Length: 95
Image 1 (cartoon, rainbow, N blue to C red):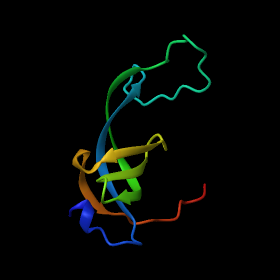
Image 2: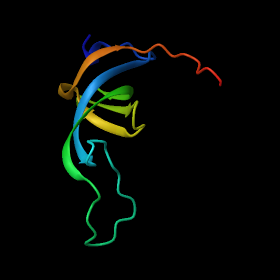
Image 3: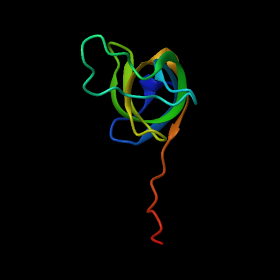
């Protein structure tokens, strides 16, 4: 399935890659309220994950998606997305 062919109103996800700041384990990190000259806690690197597509811009060929592991939102180009498939939502079991 091509991202351009996804029907509107349906839930889809994909594997993706992006360049972002990563910690030593390769997990994306976000720096909040850095002061001028203060070092970022992560180092630039390539991150791969699985995300739920939230917004699709077919003109710019980008998607906004939420990573299922970190819950962070990324904007990624179509060319950096693959294994596009539908999402089946299920209720979480209560303990």
